Image 1 (cartoon, helix red, strand yellow):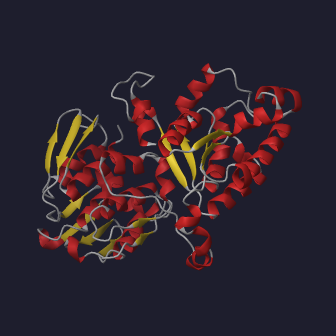
Image 2 (tube, helix red, strand yellow; image 1 turned 45 degrees about the vertical axis):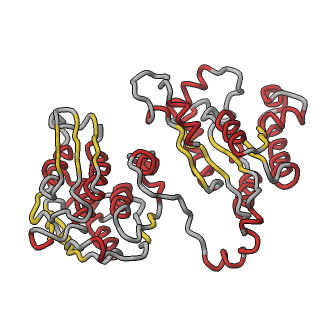
Image 3 (cartoon, one colour; image 1 turned 180 degrees about the vertical axis):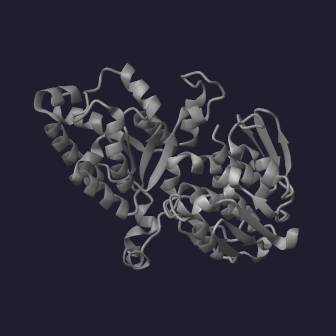
Length: 404
């Protein structure tokens, strides 16, 4: 229902010559960005069908977008970035120039967005001009864009990242989008939507230091890492055990739940350990077994699921980061916290959190620690896949299991 965010899937249809329908955004919307399809995409050559409650866009044949000439985007300033990346590949009509005005406020947003667009479009070989209240974009044919993948700096700005992800879908060499997590401000699921729902050929990657990569090449060859165990981390209640069991069966791996392993090793349940000896004692057992499992007993051929708080201890983070450095996969399940909180409110078998009972505070504290300790992320959000408004989102979990 956010009209600014809706511009990205609609722009994907425009630049790839495909079709996209966005529900809940139509002519009755009070948001200025709801006019993007009509005022921007239609003049660029797209077929636009808009009802009061939905918008459908069919892009023209790939590479045939038309330049806009002069356009005042003051009613939808945040959408200028989306328009700019489309203008970059619109070389016909109006001398191939799109002159966007009325966006002076974009100089002082999360970054100077107008300057950012000028600098990053230049990496694709696109000429621009920076103005006090706008930007001029000189469109180029798709085949004349940079043949190799430019590395796009996003300035930790979600709209820069999402806009250039659209251009990357059409550019001959694609693009590497840095700071991918910044989209979490408005659309944490964007990368999944782009790949799964829109069909964009994207892949996650972490930039590597070339010298370090060369020095460790012998340690991370396919032969050395092919049988490395898979580690799954993430918040309590996100579905690590359920998804881990499914993935282990599919991959032919042994399954180890570190919490269950700990209970068997100590001879007590986790609530008994925590209530009797405290969280510190539990974390000591956890640290000992994590190191043992990943370096000795289950270093290969296993899918290992860790407890939600495994990243709280520095010793554990060191073990996980060292494990990643060896070329092994550590997957973090990213939650819909509303669903997790509802689930945990029903499940009274787990001990209370050590510091606070507010699960959102716990997640906020752990989120950067999870990011530090994983090299893959997978979003678990049933609401994205449900076709109904029911709270339990029937059928969604089966799709999550399949995709995972």
